[in-house]
Length: 213
Image 1 (cartoon, rainbow, N blue to C red):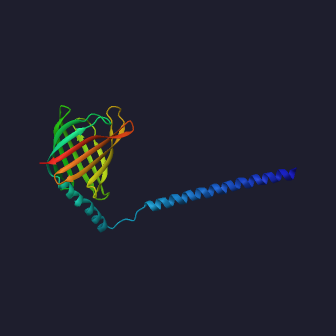
Image 2: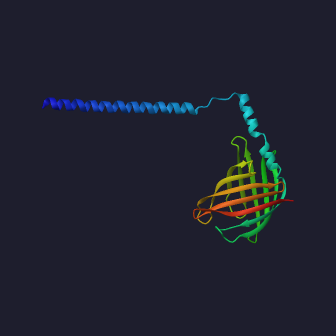
Image 3: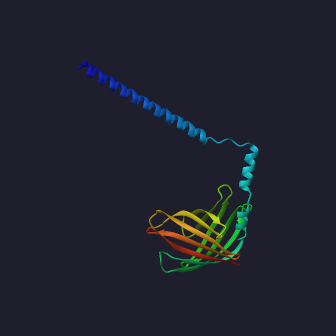
């Protein structure tokens, strides 16, 4: 009986020791992984010349900015709205004055017109980020207090830009996704389509046909 009891004590001690060793090995692996992750996160510093070159390329307008500059001028905007999927369309019109700002790095558009019987004013900006290779658009107007921000890329084959973002629904205060498709139809025509989500379903909520004066 004593031998059996002694054997059980030895087995229990071995089991506890093995658990400690496994735990220690696991902790050591975690520490090693953490060190590796930190080492990977540390980037090799660039010399001053390489840094200056990178910043110069980031700050210099390119072909994407020329594409935006081609839209400088005044545009007549024929606007159509839908408040729900397959809803009755509502019409409005506005004028957009487009120009390049800050040394040709950004596009600014100022809209004025009438919407729902009320004077309408809006302002949009468009940027192309040389580093991320993405476009960012913003829009504000006098019919709200929020800012719409969307990001996307230009497809050279379709001559269109798809931008995605979120906006706050003023009815419930919740964020909802939206999508824009901006198409270069020809030298003097642009089409902007906006898609909202209602009850989990995406639908076309706005279309603007822009004609250059």
